[in-house]
Length: 125
Image (cartoon, rainbow, N blue to C red):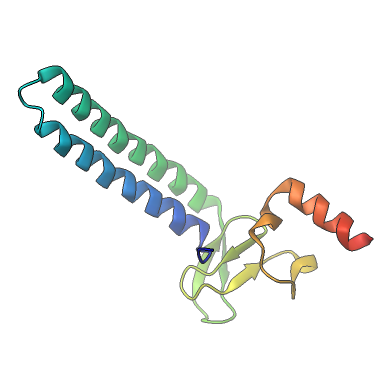
């Protein structure tokens, strides 16, 4: 299983990969210079990927401004946290603001509403 990363950093990495994917798609279009329709379609797909990256960057930027900024108890640096549980963006220390989750093993499922009610029901039994 992949190591869990900070949510904001994961989304920013996805947006950055969209830019590179768009450039690669446009580069592939250059190989079809003889067929203008195919070349144009690759160029449009590449530009759409870059526009999607811009939208994702704007979305995560607006989310980041509303995120809770906390100080990591492990490394002492400030990081932004989305959801009930998240990782420190610097040292990958599990963080939570929910007192009922302190001391429990880190699980990304705590951020999902269904998992929250299911886990609390299992613990009650």
